[in-house]
Amino acid sequence: MGWSHAFYDTESCYCLIVIVWSNIISHFQTGKKMGSDLMVETSRNPDCPKVAAVSTVVNKGTPLKAYIFRNYNLPPGVRSHYRGSCRHKIWEAVRASTAAPGYFQEFTLGTNLHQDGGLLINNPTALAIHECQCLWPESPLQCVISLGTGRFEAPSKNTTTYTSLKTKLTNVISSATDTEEVHTMLDGLLPPNTYFRFNPHMTEDVALDERRSEKLSQLQAEGLRYLERNEQKLKRAVHKLVQEKSSAQRLCEWFRLRVHMYGGLCFKR
Image (spheres, rainbow, N blue to C red):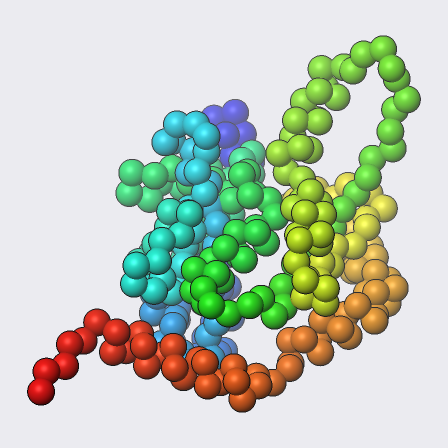
């Protein structure tokens, strides 16, 4: 940890991640290993959705900057607020976007030094909505589902005199990694029955690298209890996701596709 600023052997761990990731992808493809493919190449599969992974570039001064690994190109003339590219390999996107400080080393890609996207954007829902508006600028949001990794509220200490240095540092870290403020904002801004947030309460603060079976079973049990309590909300979200497109939506999509196909062409008689 002191020598490399990372608790784990980063290269060995990510070799394993890429192998596992490739094996998972191969179940959905014709036996082809995908780890070394470019992100944009996944768009050849008609069943593959638009996907983005977020990292934090930490060597370009302050403020820190988000970087998006996309598997899609934005429409001509459309610019996202966020830098990024679709010309990176899948394993590079995984490696860069999950380089959590203290657990894995930073990842160098070109002239950028990447760390975990959660360092800057721990709840990327607003970023995802922005990317959707770039891709489909004339389409209203139909359904946004945000999946949290669990929340734990530490017991408060009733002191009105001073806070310790440890508490101050904890507050800074908690503020930087907070996800609920973005949720509160979006919940108030987005239309009713459009936005669904699922984020179970946890009975204890579980470490990022926890692997004890009893702790994982505890997390699973708490997640299941949360879903049971929010069954109706889950059903509403499912109903939104499986809803068929209307005839008007299909016609608009067909028209926009033709515009994109022929918008830059000039016809002469």
